[in-house]
Image (cartoon, rainbow, N blue to C red; front, side, top):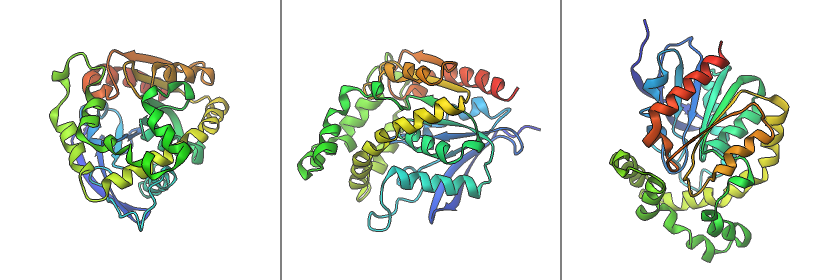
Length: 289
C-alpha cells in the first residue's frame, strides 16, 4: 500500500539538526529536493504530493534556513562549501546512495558540488532556475558583483535590501502574470526567518561567497560533459536573476537535456506546480524505466 503522507523529521548531520520532509515508500526510487534562497523545503509543498505515489521524496532545509539549525557565525562559517558538507553528512546518515537530485537557486551550487563529490550515486538531475553558466546571470547581480570585487563594508551594506520585505516580494512576484497564485504564507514565512537575529549577516556571508560558485562553473560543466546524466531543465522565463540563456546553455554540455520554459518568474512552483510535476514524472519514468 502506498503511503502518501508527508512526514516532518529531523536528523543530526555535520553537527547540525537538519529538518526535512519525507514522503513516499521506502524502497521506491529516491528524489532529493534542494531549495534555494531565501526559502526552505516548504517551497515543495505542492510538488511532493504529485511525486510521492511512485517515488520516495526527501526535502531538507539547509543550515540557516527554514526549520534546520541556524548556528551563529562564530561557530559556523556560512559558505556553500559548508552547506554542501552538511548535505553530504545528511545523505550519508540517511543512506541515500542512488537518487535523482532536483536543485533550485542556492540548491544548484550546493547540489552540483554534491554531484561532483558523489558521481556514482546520482542517477540524473533536474534544475529549476538553478544556474551553472555565466549566460544565466542577469543584471540584478550587478550590485553583488560590485561587492565581490571590492569586499568593502560599504558594498556589503548596500546589499542589505536583499533580506528585506520589498526585495523578497520582488523575487516572488516579478514575472508572475497572476499574483493571486502566490500564497502569502510563502514570503511571510521566509521573511520571519530572515528577521531572526544575525540572519542578515549570515545571508550576506552567503551572497559574498556566491562568487566561489561561479568559479566552479567550469567544474560543473566538465562534470556534465563527462557523465552525460539525464537532465531536465525547468525555467521560469521571467526570472530577473537567472535568465533563460542560463537554461539553454546546459545543452552546450548536455545536448540531450530536455528544456522547458514557463511563463512566470523565479519561484515557478508557485504558479506552475502541476505542469512541472507532470514533466518531472515523465522524466523520472524515463530515468527509471
